[in-house]
Image (cartoon, rainbow, N blue to C red; front, side, top):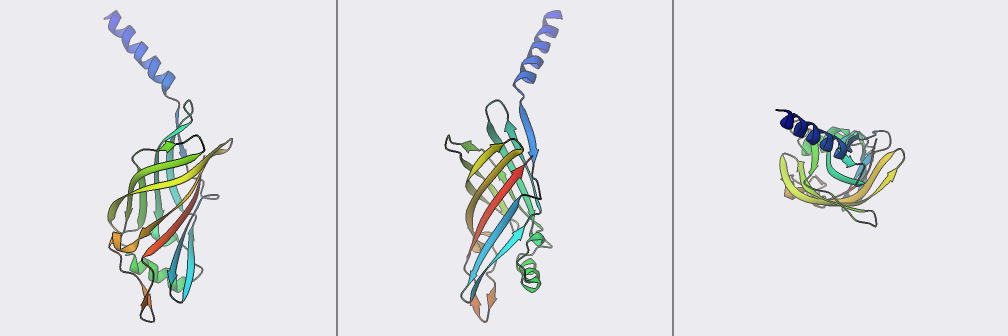
Length: 180
């Protein structure tokens, strides 16, 4: 019994000593996601600061082990309320209110490059995607930046049209996420 108790205490001590993983959450004041869409007559951006996210960061190894992000579809602002209302309609934002990304792993290279394969769920469809970006470990927390592109048709979204002309299928995304 005493040997079992000593082993139990040793295992707990080792686990505690190696558990330097911190959970950091997004700072909505400094985090931003921007989308860019193109129509034959114009190009526009929409911005959201309503980013809910968490990363698991190992202080000892200086590695990010996991990332999870959720953004409300209705939170994007293109500076045109009519377009934003139509976007919520096209994206079925009432039925599918969030866009989410959950990493399966995170690789950080010595040059600060971050590679995070994972699953993106948009419009009720989940697809594999790899986010590429960069990261900075600063005293105030971590900042991750990057960009990627998705196609609406991959997520079963009908391309919006204006004057009988459809938008491009591609949506360009850029992000800066600060975690504290």
